[in-house]
Amino acid sequence: MKNTPFTQKHIALGAKMAEFAGYNMPISYTGINDEHAAVRTNAGIFDVSHMGEFILKGEKALDLIQRVTSNDASKLTAGKAQYSCLPNKEGGIVDDLLVYCIEENKVYMLVVNASNIEKDWNWISQFNTENVEMHNVSDKTCLLAIQGPNATKMLQPLTDIDILNLKYYTFAKGRFAGVDNVVVSATGYTGAGGIEIYFEDKDGAADKVWDAIFAAGGPQGLKPIGLGARDTLRLEMGFCLYGNDIDDTTSPLEAGLGWITRFTKEFTAKDILEQQKKAGVTRKLVGFEMIDKGIPRHDYVIADAEGKAIGKVTSGTQAPSLGKAVGIGYVETAFAQLDTVIYIKVRDKLLQAKVVKFPFV
Image 1 (tube, one colour):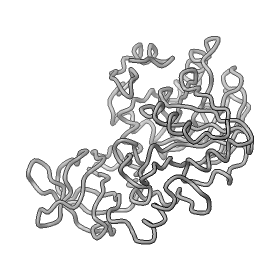
Image 2 (cartoon, rainbow, N blue to C red; image 1 turned 60 degrees about the horizontal axis):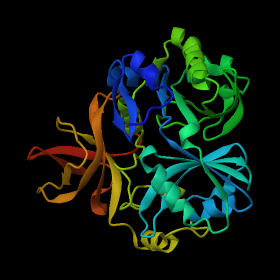
Image 3 (tube, rainbow, N blue to C red; image 1 turned 60 degrees about the vertical axis):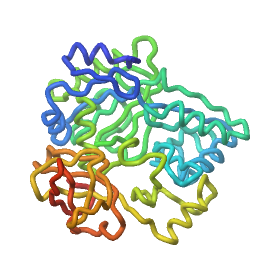
Image 4 (tube, rainbow, N blue to C red; image 1 turned 120 degrees about the vertical axis):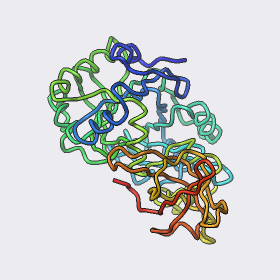
């Protein structure tokens, strides 16, 4: 198992550790519900240094990104980021990712899922026919997400970047906690506001930044947060998790990601996805809340009133902010309308649920 530069910090703080995407990661500290509430109401810090970062440089960097991603990266100016995905040749999803424009038409950073670093690198590399300079900087890049309504207020004293007014999906580069060259971005996967910070771990930068964040935020209730609460937070927002809700067999249109699928440019499987859009998809990813008591789990069967399978649960939990169980899953299109009653098969029982709108909170 790999460690992040913060692994010893998590252990010292009493985190329950477990393997995730090949890394020794904190799953929880004081309990998922407690950590979840801290992020929704105040602020929490996540170590997400296991994520992958690729730098693409050169005159043809944008051209390469345009050909491999579904969203239109030509819309990005320096300091802007976008959510996108890498379609495979069948119209499935190799990965979902963030594209950061560092220098327009010249330098970009792609942030990919931890479990897909090698897969994504190999996938993008095979399309690199114009000798774009590619650097996999994943192993030397620290990534911390400080999320919650009070996160930027707590951290503003640590930087001269105006993080209080950083707009969603924009970023700035500067000095943070005495460390130079830090990318501070208003991204994050919790829906609770806050920032993510990227920096290289050299000359003790990881310890310096972590300690400074706790010195500034600790007295105001900042808490360390594990991957357990990260999952419940993203689920309440209806955000997809790769490997659960989207994968190589799901198309962006089925997954409700039509908004990041731009047909104004050429990209992998464009024809297949265009055809899908025209004909309509046969299944859709929907959000649902349980009416009967029970918690939906990954891979549980979704059925109609007669018990006939109409789909599958991809993610589900007891939502801490709502006090009720919610889930995400694919269903046949006829059952995807809001307020449609569906049934979740839990231990041979059919439990009633209904289709609702994202986000859940």
